[in-house]
Image 1 (cartoon, rainbow, N blue to C red):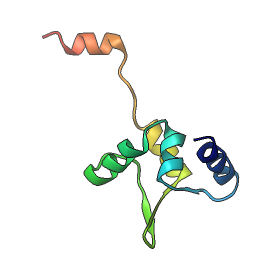
Image 2 (image 1 turned 90 degrees about the vertical axis):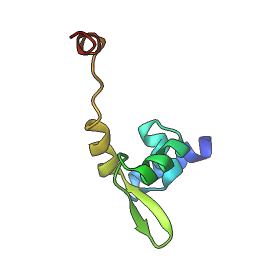
Image 3 (image 1 turned 45 degrees about the vertical axis):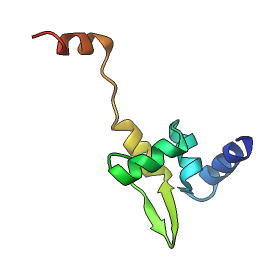
Image 4 (image 1 turned 60 degrees about the vertical axis):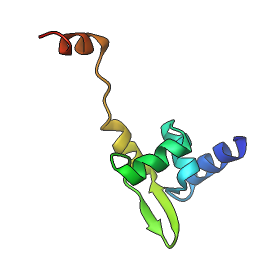
Length: 81
């Protein structure tokens, strides 16, 4: 796991493209969750480089910023009718 973290940090300084494991670490999800999102939709935008899946850091950031969490107060009001 530390190796993946180091590789993700180096990738951010160099190439803007991350593999699935690096991208999952970057956005705080498990690799499997990111893979499922890729298949079902709703996850961050990705691209294929040959047979390899790559995520661009800017697209991961944009996706992450577009995932707001409602506050508990909003959740409570939504349940009241």
